[in-house]
Image 1: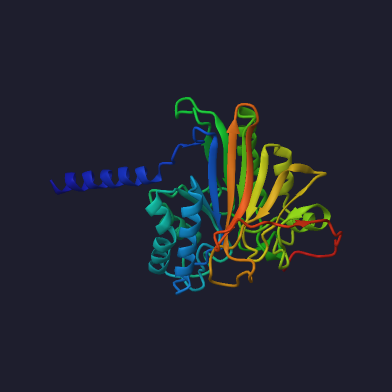
Image 2 (image 1 turned 135 degrees about the horizontal axis):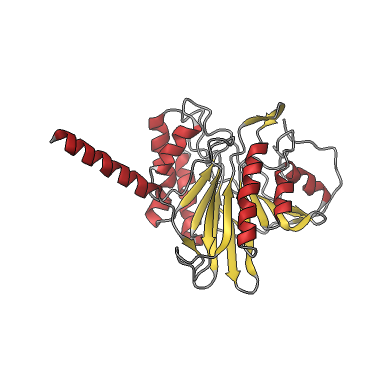
Length: 349
């Protein structure tokens, strides 16, 4: 009898775990809209300033009422929040507002998340225990942990008859060092191979869809295009991109359907940029630092979040607009920066 009961409980636990891991079927609403909030560099670490971050999350979510939240790394600071118990407590605080409002989320990791005793695998297991988490483990044969994608479907789609209108790609950009070069991490070549394979399949099957890439560490092109093309926003620190370019930007250009890539990492850079010559419709954007731990922008620049509003209709396919909402509840007007041709600036090492 005890054996039968044990088997029953084991099967029940498996079914519960499976239900928690089930991905939601995301759709544009009847007006053809889908809104994403990007929280980045939350840096939860069990300090009193965590409360300020929670309050800011509440402000942003109350005003914007998004369909989804994307968190682009340094969600916790593993140097201070470094035990499973600490992380679980921090995670409860961090996702609390999303849980209250029934807003699903997905994460990718930054360079600080796993700097303590726990690994990225440990942390992702904690995140996946929440039913609203849409985060996934990537293929075991590919570098990094959080390499996965999420589909967003047209308003009239059903699970049995679906049309993909947008794909969100989450990529783990590592922590430190890139193919033998010092400095910050990068998206590795085998991750780009995986991205090419998956994204090309979507492009073949759904030619009118739009792809969006989320990662933590900015691409080297973020620095290059600031100096060589027009940008919108502010640059208050050296771009902390990897010392070696592994070619993710070119992979996005070659795909043709990727229109936006969003990073975190640089706490006081918030600009969007592009290359008119290479891909005028592919924008690279910094998020706005959300968390209050670690260094912050100085007023009149305030912590906040980037908002991505997607639109879909049969005529134009999927398009987007993006803005920053700050802690003052204002939409930030991002100034135009013209190319200055200062080509000697290098990524921070």
